[in-house]
Amino acid sequence: MIHAKTLVLAGKEDLLFEVDACTALARAITDAQIVVLDRVAHSIHMEDPRTFIDCIVQFLSR
Amino acid sequence: MLRILPQGPVHTSYLTHSRKVYAMPTAPINGIDLYYDTCGSGPPLLLIAGLGSDSQSWLPVIDSLAPRFTVIAPDNRGMGRTQPTDVETSIEGIAADCIQLVEWLGIESVDVAGHSMGGFVAQVCVVQRPGRVRRMVLAATGLSNSARNNLLFTDWAALLESGTAGDLWFRNLFYWIFSRQFFQNPAAVEAAVRMAVEYTILRVRRPSRGRLPRLRISTATPSPR
Image: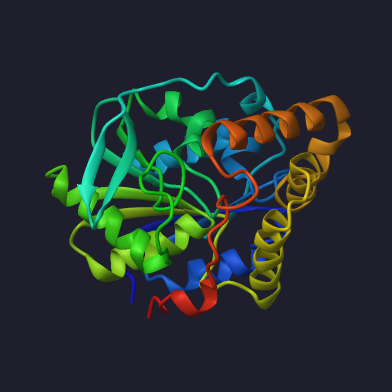
């Protein structure tokens, strides 16, 4: 069981790890939240670096 | 908690990112010279790249993370500037390298962000060293790899080894990893293809093989339970 606080980021258009797969991952971790980014596919940090950074900074600043 | 973010602009700015060179250290661990990019200041944040990519994968975000975190981004074994390139690789092996790197750097606990296969690696790290990994960001990844992904990755490696033209190979890769919007701008697509091909030739002595380690991720990933 993973107990580390976790943020899962999913791309709504991701074909390799679809939102369902990312959601299953988040559900399997005790303390996880998931954010689904619209209009991006698998390469989340390349297609929307701003939102990727904002999510990480917000999550890790808590 | 499920949040759907509102639609924002999709950036293709990574196309224009210069290949900035930060400190270029290597760590002698687990029989390899593990290269890692490091920059910034603040609490340590380990970035683990996905299959077939290296620390350069983080170029679009590394500058913005640097003011807040000490970013550590290794080239996973077999990739990029980590030497030698002709080594056995696995999710567990890459995870062991990451753990060793953190310990070698004398870091007590670290936040870890992993993309795709890097997310599997991050999960192995936290299972192996729960005290060492503080928090995780898991991007575009899952509990296991699908059968389709395993077949796809095997085919990608086979196509590389059979000498498929680099531009054709990357364009076909891009169909799987970029959004519909990305392909609206054919010039940007071709620029990205060109850049990927040039980077591969620059970085890999044997451009016909070696960019994509053969990993069957489903068998290599432990259940997080």
